[in-house]
Image (tube, rainbow, N blue to C red; front, side, top):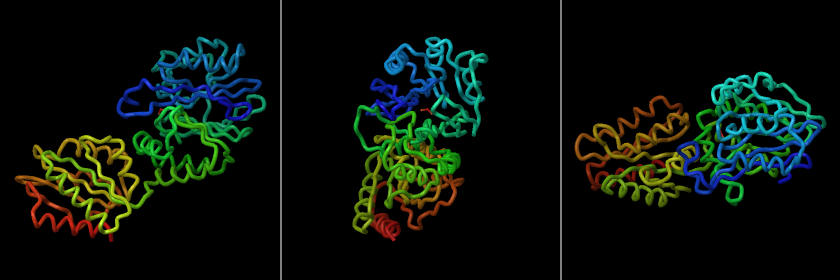
Length: 384
Ligand code: FEO
């Protein structure tokens, strides 16, 4: 794949993977992107997952033939991108690795060598000329690990953005960018909104025509669309108006309450109601929705003196990812001593700028006239 006359795609698609990063369901696979810059000094950007070393080196040979790369630029050391560094350095014994100081520490940890005699350490603002192409390195700590360095090619106006602007899904599957980019962002980078904001400030002064991430498609048109979404996501803003109802239900009574609330919300004109069963639906989708919409209802049972485990897991994901700036309502169910709302509120205590609804609902085993009326009040409150 040609990105510009000099920049070629040499990444791979992974349709074998069951869970990305050991936890994310990726029904359409995953892409590990890698790029070659053809110049007097040929540079390769990042390697690929361990299982695709031969294919990746073959892709590089397909572009450069018998020539040898001068540099391997390592922007990120997570193994989905770094696992074939040693194979590359063996295949090209004269190549030099260009990376951050912390990345070389990680190479020592992963590979038992930090390539001391075959490396160039770069930091934010450093430059490297390949001949025609001039590269500037951009420190991007915690997007998504501390050693991350991105790269701007001022000749072709390309931002090599490491994990930023990536998404789940292999490149031979045609699907909407935002849906799987949002699930990827909030699952993987979401905690680091401040650091992404810092990166966006650095990127704002660059003339960028193309973004080359390490996952997902190369972005060329309408870059403002992607950058604007990253700005909303990383500032924990509300992307879409609507209400998310995340629930667990043991025997169906809490589910019945949730269905009634969803119906009443729609009757009250709520623009979007997204309902998710935390025991059965994709947890990462639920997390993504919690950060997408401005209002969320958490509905669960009191369970073993606590709350139902899937709800505990969900709220832990939210708090770990800096959940904030939202309206939150609760539905609790209990046949004796219901206290799920108290537990859920306690879990959210450290979150910034949450507004709690006034009409939280208590169900004693099953809906009755009183709890049904409360649900109607909650629906009205959330649609104000
Ligand atoms: Fe795609 Fe943070 O690794």
